[in-house]
Amino acid sequence: MIVTSTALIKSRIPNAQTIVDGLMKGSRKPDKILFFISEEPHMIDEGIKPHEIPQINNPRVEFIYVENIGSLRKIVPVLKMFWSRKSTQIIICDDDRKIQPDIVKKLTDYQQDINHRFHACGTAGNIWSGMKKEYEKKGAIYKFPYSPHMPQGTGIVLGWVIKEPLQVDILSSGMQTLVKPKFFSEDILHYEKYLEEFGVNRTDEYFISYMLAKKGTKRFVVPINQCPMQLPVKEQLYHQKITAKYKKAQVDEFRETMLEWRK
Image 1 (cartoon, helix red, strand yellow):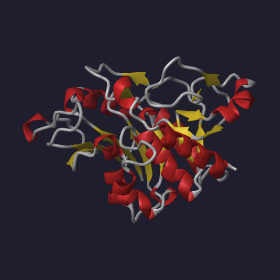
Image 2 (cartoon, rainbow, N blue to C red):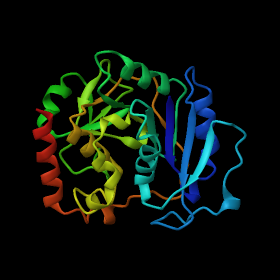
Image 3 (tube, one colour):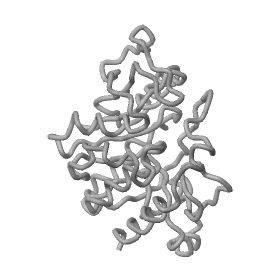
């Protein structure tokens, strides 16, 4: 079974139809398209009332109310739903990204290959500075002057510019990442104890990749033909002032732990 999981906030309600339309144009369609929503507000999410839920005429689409735990809604609730079905392919993505038609097939084909069946994969990711030279030789590293999600010193690997799968430390869950319940230990269901650790209270990329690494699941960016398009947004979820509150010790410890597990 293939499931897509998105945490939808109020200001991006119109994006839901665009996301569904992109998925349904693909040669391989998900069996379920899940949007996790909350009535209570959180950060810039004002909450979605029942009468505001988009009316999308597609039996694969479900809008599911859950506790508002921010961006972690895209991963924790869906894992709880399919925890007993360990091989379910779950593609997580943000509500401000249009999923290009071939991406579901690209990710699932990679993961179903016998050599990659234990790998999580995605369309973009980050590596720590120690790996940059190796990847720069392949023309695979892009350096952004400022990335609010990632600390300085990381390199960005984009699936639409690479010719072969490349291992990364952090997968960019906002631009489509494929995981399975069996890729995680049960710790991920008890996310509360990690909220103040490694900055996961700010962005889910740290949390998801840390939990994958903890189970020994490698992370790869795979070649894709098209860039996942940015959809219109009124306001970005993460601001420089908020990100600046990361404690340096948390980031350093996270980096050292991930590098150690990469060996």
